[in-house]
Length: 236
Image 1 (tube, rainbow, N blue to C red):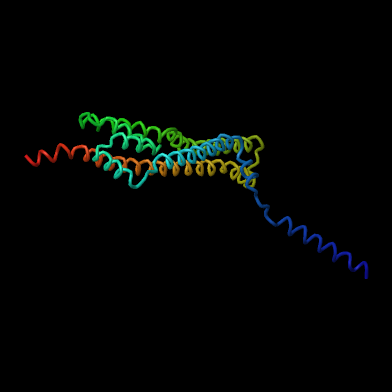
Image 2 (cartoon, rainbow, N blue to C red; image 1 turned 120 degrees about the vertical axis):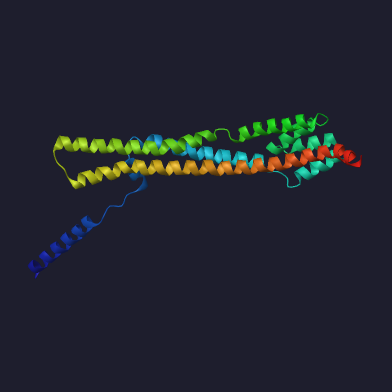
């Protein structure tokens, strides 16, 4: 009886080992990244740089472009009533890009309209430049990251065929195994490029909305300053 049971145990063990060998090994994210080689180091640097720039600019733009919905109405009422100092203090207390633009513009009241318009335009350009600071790096990352990935893939393919030429052994397993490892860099580079590209344009959309709001408010502000001179002209 014992002799008859031994082969059955061995067959079961062999079956289990064969099943375990047939199961594909799962790839962990860290292992997958490590297989990309040295090119993954600059790609990782670009990735974290893009994330930092996106979040840093997002919070800066969000804090500097928010404004009171009644901001221009309050400024208009104060200026119309002759409370220039109150209007200037109100704009200064906003502590936003919009507030700084109109603080300078209100301080120029009494000068010709062209000078006030020039002040609004100049200060507005300065504030826009502050909002756009370092955003150019996102555009650079969006272009460089995919190219770095392709460089890693091409260098890996060159290495694979060089090894084949030395060993004189063309094996699909060798080629496929090395190739999928090197194409990881292309995928990583494209992902980083997409993140940087998307972040760059989303931030630009936020700045464009602020620019439109600034132009509308500036037009209404200049219109208030022109009313005292325009009404007597109509009366005559």
